[in-house]
Image (cartoon, rainbow, N blue to C red):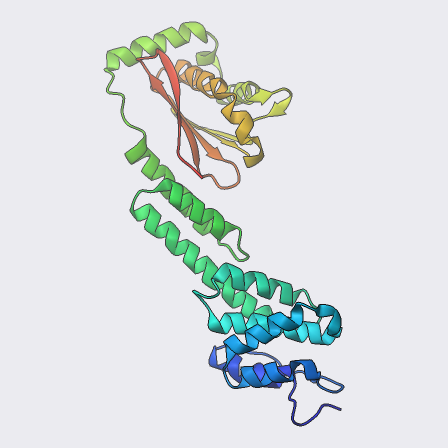
Length: 300
């Protein structure tokens, strides 16, 4: 039977969790309370989380001396103490790592604390994205958005909105007009029409099929997605294929050249990362080079 002087883990941490706005169903621990954790119980009950943490680290350094239930309780307590102490001593990623290890133990009671930590990390990453977007910093925004995406509970609709705002920044602040006259653009388009004689006769579906073939490298499809809207072509590349894409930029410029020949206009191809739709390249028609040019956009 459990000793009256040694309360169960659930009874011991319930007031602490209640103060944090957390809930935990009380559980009954059978058998005698392990003496190895007696001091840490007292430290936690007194709010001496730093002292309890030091003792827990020492205990878990020799896990073979603890029973399976003691190891589970010690890991739960380590999660709790780091959560209570918090940053800067224990940044959120460090807390998460400890609590993830705790929840892997059968019967762990750290799940809700882990959920609180991950929610805080999502908020922190989302705030970083918003700050970066306000300063037109696509690199920082994408880096923070990827951190956000990697966390459980990430909002895909929010990721899509961030992607659209990144592209707005690209259009307004990164892709600069080349200043060519309409006559120069027209001459370039006519030259491309002579090179791609069949392009302007293609239906939309036929042209998209041609683009897919042009984006096939050594039998592998480089473009994971293709869409066409007037003079703007959008293609996406999977992260696993980014290196191959960087070695085959000529395929992107050829596609945009054919686009210009087909529409008889100043064509543009937007290349995004398939998994996120974040900006990767923009291919524009440049009369100075008498064809298309790929602009490599900054990204992590």
